[in-house]
Amino acid sequence: MDKRNHMGKATDEVIIPVAPIISEMSDTYLSFIDNIKNEIKKQRLSVVLSANASMICLYWNIGKAILNKQAEEGWGSKVIDRISKDINDAFPDMSGFSPRNIKYMRKFAEVWNNYEIMQRTAAQIPWRSNILLMDKLSNQDERVWYAQKTLENGWSRDVLALQVESRLIERSGKSVNNFPIALPPADSDMADQIFKDPYLFDFLGTDVPRREIEIERKLTEHIQQFLLELGQGFAFVGRQVHLEVGGQDFYLDLLFYHLKLRCYVVIELKACDFEPGFISQLNMYQNVVNDVLRHPDDKPTIGLLLVKGKNKTVVEYSLAGYQNPIGVAQWQEQITKQLPEDLRSSLPTIEEIEKEME
Image (cartoon, rainbow, N blue to C red; front, side, top):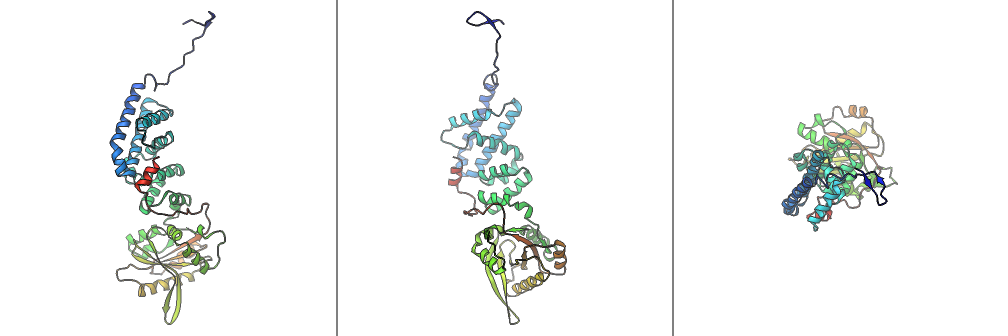
């Protein structure tokens, strides 16, 4: 069609396409956003009463709905801004529906595509912890593993960040040990997963002592951080525990009790590389603990030898023939990130969840 400007000259007509969400898609969008609002209304009470799981399931449902509609209707990423505005207009007293957070909801539904698995694991840990898992990990199996460990151990977000950065998943179950022949299958599997290699003692500081007695002292001075690195279930019993054997005095480095394994754990710490004779010494300590300290209901004492370096083959040959369960792992003093000051290991309160949603 010939269009003329105010001078009477012909000019080409310029047609600016209207985004489908505003014109022909508007009815579809309005129906969609109404469904989102109804879902929020239904879930609002349960979000307050069972804050974390309900909130995260709600986020998953919103994210899944957005993914489905984007696939069906071809909506682009800009629809997120409108969804955010409409939800905030409808629920001005609620928070957590910024464009950035809604994008995380969409990603959350995308990576946790199995609702039942999400409900059992991811929905049971804080939303900020889930965001960390989405940001820091690209492998879904690893996300599931760390979510399960967070749930089991009650890690805060800062502690979870530390465990992800230190690649705990790659260290768990890596100690060289004789557990399969020294323990029943169920106990062997549990012990194998509880012990790791290497152990990271970055909280010792930059001036790391070179004598065992000094390292032990620093570990017990930082017992909370040490217990965190050891893992869930360890209870500290003592340091330099005195044992009298045949009229001679011996002092085992560190003694713990593990609440899940139901047994004592003797830890011998060496500031040098592995030597076969270390196994014999640790084995003797275990025998004495079994004879003197062990309750009839306790399971056999486990020994953990921590060294600065080891040859796996030499360790395996050194363990051959011993009946007491023994694990050997390395310890390191440096990683890239310091432990957070707040090491409170518990899931957040409802008040903290509500603050998280602001």
